[in-house]
Length: 351
Image (tube, rainbow, N blue to C red; front, top):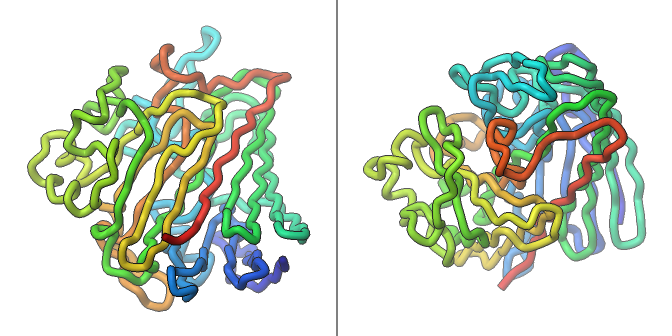
């Protein structure tokens, strides 16, 4: 294993950024920025052993600063949506910065995806690690408590990209950290993800209302047109986007699939490319995964590639959206003396 670095331009504050590339014994690699903890590249082999980058992204750091899709980035303090950009915790009301209509999305307009993280690389036998740290001050984006965050990215000789999230607070707060990588197992420059196959191992999907805010109800996944309880071609589901009353407001799939078993490791999703043979298993101890089919993409990406509707697929492991307003959802509350700790692995292989 080896770790190399290169400059990646400046962020929106003029700070120089660095891209760290973790390369395994077989030549597969993952590249990550200290800015936003952004995953810029994931190059893994197909069934013929040919490497291709399966992660959408940009060629310089500045392009990520104007990306409303948070491409490849670490998301915090709170992944997904909080209704009305407000919540009450231990009897005290908190107001957040709205950035998704009247709601708060991914922590607000100045989320962790736009922060410079401190990076420490560590080469190892069979696995490399990039450790990123950040201190989010009390009141950041309206959230209470000073939050100290550590994220370990690992990449090993088995082509597994691991992300371990840790956080502590000095005041009771809410936390829901995730990563917003856009995958396309046919290659980041393929037209779309429609020919990919997806299966999600979850009994339910959180029902949503206006603004994709959960109602609190859990719907049986097997009964939904956008269900992936059995492996389905993404294009067959996305063909319903303009007619299904739930998918139409979302423009495609943008829903939380609820597996439960919070803090228990499980395979929550499998993505497969019949064309290339690449497979990605998503292993996590989180109870949910947000499946987002990239309907909002309309960017010029790496190498001049034009990303459009459905060019990439996000599989964001998480506790459920807006959980602070739904006590029966797995809790996102973190108190002083506790440690927020969760791990997700994107394990790449072929078949």
